[in-house]
Length: 107
Length: 120
Image 1 (cartoon, rainbow over the protein chains, first blue to last red):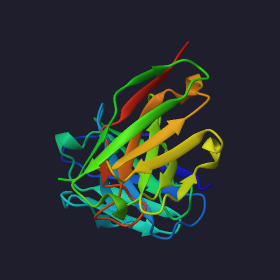
Image 2 (image 1 turned 180 degrees about the vertical axis):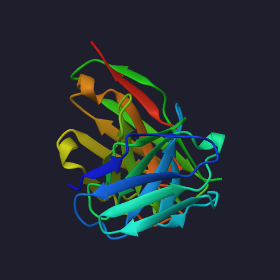
Image 3 (image 1 turned 120 degrees about the vertical axis):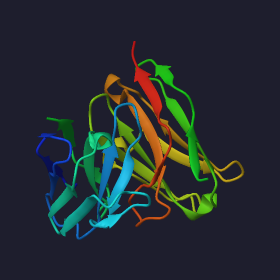
Image 4 (image 1 turned 120 degrees about the horizontal axis):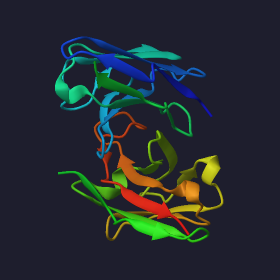
């Protein structure tokens, strides 16, 4: 199965700053990569799919890029509601696999 | 609106089985496959498998082969996930999820989750 590796495990950022999260696949997943946000006690929320397409209702400060094995999620200017855990997911091959998550915390 | 509503929390003993339901509304039930994803406490997400309500076709993650069964009831627009021979490391929140307005494989609609606790 494809292993998804996210870095860093924890990212400390001040409100208003930019955050850059990375996700690496153990083999190419083309652009079949999604990003999710999860807050404590809540269900995952889809942010991006197809590596760079924002899901419905997702603010423009979220952007995604990459293809093949290297992907990035950028949050342009962190708002208080953006502090959460972020997961990447590949859906190019079954079993679909998730990264271990990056926690974005307030600096 | 599109909604997936799951059954309530369960407590099971090791070796027992659990069956979680996922009732869909707000869309054509047979048009989209249902995936099941679980999340152990403090851990990441783990895809367990997928079922097509239209054909009944399934695909299970190898890790669960032999002890998982996914089914659907089109008369009630409900999906089911049964996991047998439960162990303590099966303690997790179990989610059903579908992708409607997105690429196949991504999930934009999630159930609220069902906590399954396996403990003697």
